[in-house]
Length: 315
Image (tube, rainbow, N blue to C red):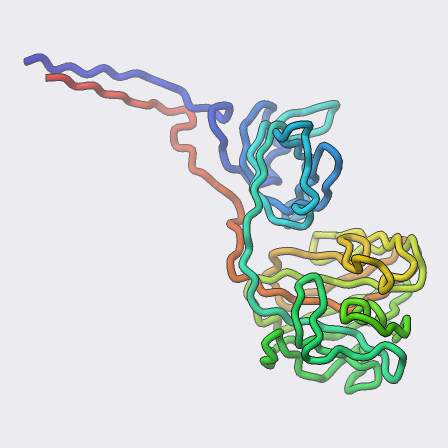
């Protein structure tokens, strides 16, 4: 009977298989690493995406699809990216990548519409469905109601008609309107809180641990540019349409609305700052996330520079 074993050594490197990193860590890594990370698609261009994390760090991502084709449906979606880290013309990019949407479960929704008192735009009814997240039971804040637009005192209900703890205050603004009669989506943009150079909305007692926030914009002027900021993340909205309620479709990302994903803070402040034109906030939706993506795929690469022992025994 003969027994023997042989030990072979091997080095496992970040260029052999994908390794998990936070998006913010990519800038400090050498070229040619194979990386895996999670972020939100904030731009979809011909030939590439821009993916950003919650701290506003972003990177260009080119896919392995034929012709580097991109998918517009991934805009504002949370995705996992696996690809080849490289520097091209002094720009850090991820090439030859695969991108997979991380599905986030949608729970309850609190929808709020600014409604100008006694004007031509009818308020939302409890059965009217509107919004990017299409639900009923919108809450109308009447400009002449308790507290008006700036300090509403009403109880806000979710899409099931259940009372919530959410409260709202607005730093400044006044009512304005298109006097729109049409579909619920068109009426959503029909009235708005006109805030001139900018304002701050503060949402407190948000009843969800994790949530997305959709902010809807409307105003008279085209070519308005407004920066909406939550924490360290800024979304730039360019209102390239002169009459948002008349557009088809009415909901256009970064044109008639912006979205902040995977928030977990309360209170939360939404700072609207005009770059050009005026700020006009038509309403917003707070959307509960019941399944939140992992903050990162932090794989413990214990064999990064270790030994892989292979034993072979034969009797």
